[in-house]
Length: 248
Ligand code: COA
Image (tube, rainbow, N blue to C red; front, side):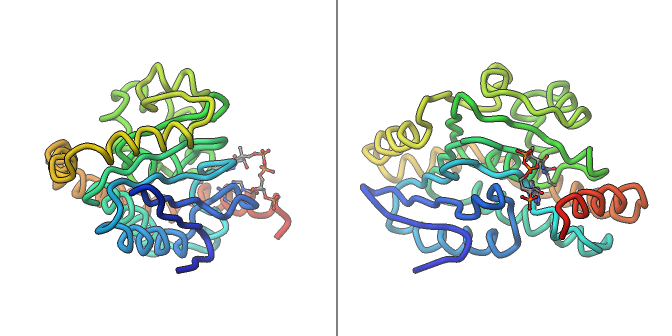
C-alpha cells in the first residue's frame, strides 16, 4: 500500500512507519494522521512491534498552515484528530517505539509522548513552542507531559516554549535512551521485544496503560481549551504572522 505522507515497511516482525514530509520538517497534517492510523491498523495483526519516526526530523509539530482562518470549533476538531492518534498509539496492541531525530516539537513531541519507548538522537531538539503562537499544547502536551516529566518541568517547557537538547530531555525523563543512531537502536529494542512471548508483551502494554479513561477525558478538556484560544485576536495575529513569514 502506498501513502502520500508516510512510507511503510514490514521486516523481521516489525512494522516501520517513516514520516515522509521532510521538506516540511514532517509537520503533521490531518492526512498524515489518517495515513498513520491506516498503516498501523494494517500492521496490527502481523507485526509484533512498530518503529516510527522521521529520518532527518521527527516533526516540527502541527502544520501551522492548517490553522489559517481556523475558528474555535474547527480548532477543537483538529485537536481531537491529534488526540485520536495519540489514543490509538496507546490502545494499539503492539509496542510502538519512536526514534527521534532533529526537531521534535509541538504536536510531534506530543505524539511521541504516546509511543511506548522513545529513542533520541544526540542532536535532537525537543520543545513545546505553541505558546509563541498564542495557542496551548495539544494531544497531551498539558496532560501526558506532566505525567512523564513532572508538573514543574512540564510547565517550564510549556510556558517558555524553549527547545531543550537531547541530554536535558534525558535528564528530565522525556526520552528513554539516547543513541548515536536512534533508528538502529529502535530496531535493536524491537527485535528484543519480538523475541519475547507475544501475548505477555501485549498484556504488559495494556496493564501499564490501564488509566486510559482519565487520559481520554483530560485530552478532551485540553482540546476545548485549545479551541477557545482561537477566538483570541492575539492568537490569530501570531498564526497569520507565521504564515506571512513563509510568504505563502
Ligand atoms: N508548520 C508549518 N510550517 C512550518 C512549521 C510548522 N509547524 N515549522 C516549520 N515550518 C516551515 C517554515 O515555515 C519553513 O518554511 P519555508 O521553507 O516554506 O519558509 C520551513 O518549515 C523551515 O523552517 P525554518 O523556520 O526556515 O527553519 P529553521 O531551521 O530556522 O527553524 C523551526 C525550524 C522548526 C525551529 C521553526 O521553523 C519553528 O519554530 N517552527 C514552528 C514550530 C512550532 O511552533 N510548532 C508547533 C506548531 S503548533
